[in-house]
Image 1: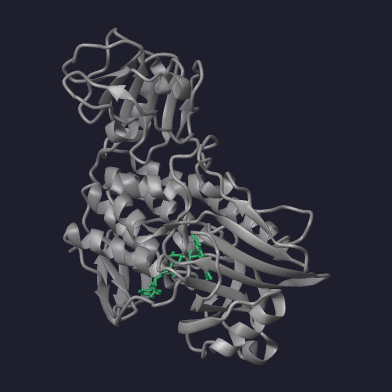
Image 2 (image 1 turned 30 degrees about the horizontal axis):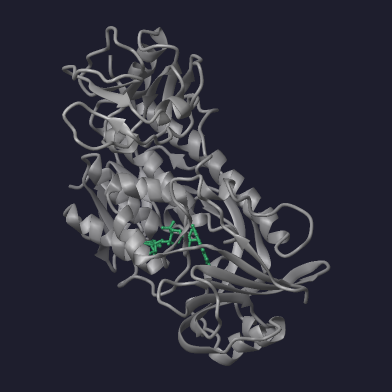
Length: 507
Ligand SMILES: Cc1cc2nc3c(=O)[nH]c(=O)nc-3n(C[C@H](O)[C@H](O)[C@H](O)COP(=O)(O)OP(=O)(O)OC[C@H]3O[C@@H](n4cnc5c(N)ncnc54)[C@H](O)[C@@H]3O)c2cc1C
């Protein structure tokens, strides 16, 4: 019996299954659909997701398959167009454009490399749990698992079976999407939006996001009443309804753009609707929910899939550590405690940004917030901060630093290369004294001067001074998902021992 069942092979379920496998836990993953969906929903991949994909080993493939999103050309209310450039040069990655079907293809291939195949055409119909496990009905047949993770999208059967409220509301408008060729001379990676704001109503809009294939765009806009009539689904692609034809998409471009480009070669189209909802709980006993099963909101800022991928990365290492008997079972409480506030923030931010889309004032998508680099768990009861000179606090993402030299290695290293792995890492700056030797804990020492190798520790020389600039002079315990579990003035502080035991079951 596979112990864990992942329900849903969208980007979040695929990440969950891959991350569990990387942490040494095999699972089964099912999807009720016979084949992957052809629709391009998510395109924007955040810098933080690229960092996580780097850890998983698929960032390079994703970058090769995508294109960088360089900015947006805006035509607002008949005024002259203006360009907003995505200046993310101070971040590890820019925003990547990768159609969701490509993301799913890459993640599926990555999962297959780990020996796990999606069981397609298998639907979860019902679920009940007791003290020892979870009984589920798959295509009418009963089976038992130790844990179930519902990554089964906005209409999650897992969430329904648990009776978890999905509070929020639906937007009144119905939108239409199309994958088209657009004859317009836009710079590489530049998106386009044309907006005509209306008082007390959503703005009329036409948005074109570039796809990796030259000349192709995913266009979206509000659907006219004639097409929208009959759309009843409260969120997502209205798969049972006929999508708009090329003429319907062209009509909106003609109405809103001063020199409208010709749209051609429509590959697919669909209607979709948007809701803003957040699950009241992310966990019930042995069952968890993640991704759109837990939070849905407007696509403004490209946050949904990326937030779900981070849900999966947050939960996978914890579940693996608890199942292996290393970490205390209570660590699983930290999943909802850390990820639900992030979901709530994304729902609130994307709603505000979509209401103000194309308006002069009000909240806008935040360039830095939307990269998801700033997501932190400072308020989590599972991180501990005992002070430090500078650098990331407990709960923050541990940043990268380049130019690190290691004895015997003829090229500079990045801190991320050294941190990558499945164990927690004690990171110490400029310390030559006694260091803990604990099975399951890696120790990395970074110093301003070159050091001899030391048995049981990775000794690095901060030759470029980048580590000192990002971290200062303290000690950090970094979790396998790249967040700081503990910060303190030095490695012999008692707070480190407490965190190692409480979070990782290491003493
Ligand atoms: C127009 C549009 C644009 C978007 N743009 C972006 C963007 O740029 N960036 C971004 O981050 N996000 C974006 N999103 C949001 C993104 O598409 C979703 O957040 C993402 O698909 C969520 O992934 P998921 O794996 O949680 O759910 P899904 O992708 O919905 O996958 C759920 C899977 O579960 C399966 N399933 C459902 N029920 C069952 C069952 N009972 N048994 C077995 N399997 C089941 C389904 O078949 C499906 O394959 C956009 C969305 C839309 C509509």
